[in-house]
Image 1 (tube, one colour):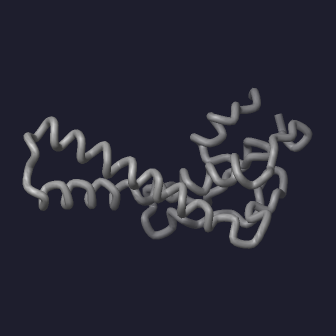
Image 2 (cartoon, helix red, strand yellow):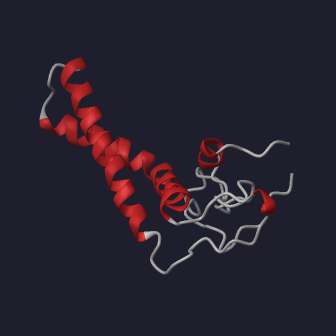
Length: 128
């Protein structure tokens, strides 16, 4: 088994140091526990919250994704639905953002870990 690339590790919600250990304890579709994370990587033992409040930054990443969704859905509705009433815009955007919330939550935390935590891939921690 080859070590996954950084992009593959991000898409599969894996540890930034070993790229093999899971970050979340349950699948995203488990709506009661989609946000449950391991405190430490099950493979290499990395403590995921390397500094207090690390994941507060993930809120800004998630906000950016939500703004992008609002913009894209707004443009699509305007062009494809002929500029419907404001209530249609609000209901459509709210529905999509609510349905995407578990994925956005996870993706923003994973991106925070991989790009802003200062943790780099170290092949000595991989169990390949």
